[in-house]
Image 1: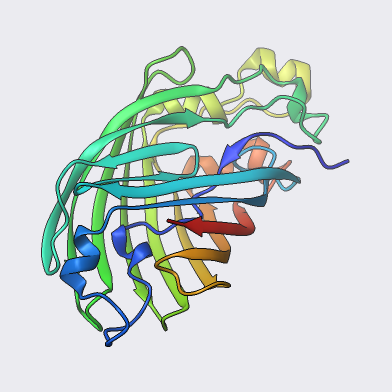
Image 2: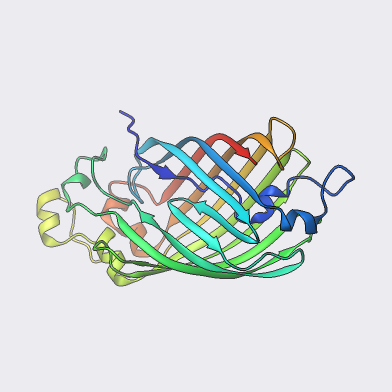
Length: 281
């Protein structure tokens, strides 16, 4: 039976180029004008995600996202996190820096797998941190962006109580005045404490579930690649209604792949899909 849980999907662009949705031309503002433009985009739809990271059971979720720019300060949601870039973007080369706040909802509660559900329940991790990176614009047209970024997050609640590091490389560009595309690759590195909280199985957990005991160590947790496509319905992507589709593939590696909740009860191959509508002002 499919169930619904709240999640903010990273269905919007990874850079201010989301608003830069057409090639240069007489009907379009210049790249400088677009970089200075205040904008707001709100999106909603439906997503499809694993029950937990490493599960081979999936469920539907409502999906929503927001991004925008105001007086040079840009903000965007990626998954369940809000990013605020406090450095004004440029049209050629720029630095990206700002805070991140959000939640990691990798909970093993009310899942389809009756065996994994016998293990101790994990909690939602409330994480805060920041990101820093550099971005290049105008590589293939005046509106594209290539961005290299490092995210650092720490659990301030009482879940995994550790710090994670996530480097990523994003490229976004308009394909026409009505079509936008963004691609991203990245990875996540975590501590022994994180690995132990989500992927280890204690002797007591082994006794309760029948799964073998397992002591997971930290390091590289996974690598991932994603693609977003956005198509204008009314006008162009600078203003009006559009539809989007996004897909992300990730693969667990190392002890995260070898944990019994993945190797015996799930899969290292993970998919996240979403589709919906967006409106830009």
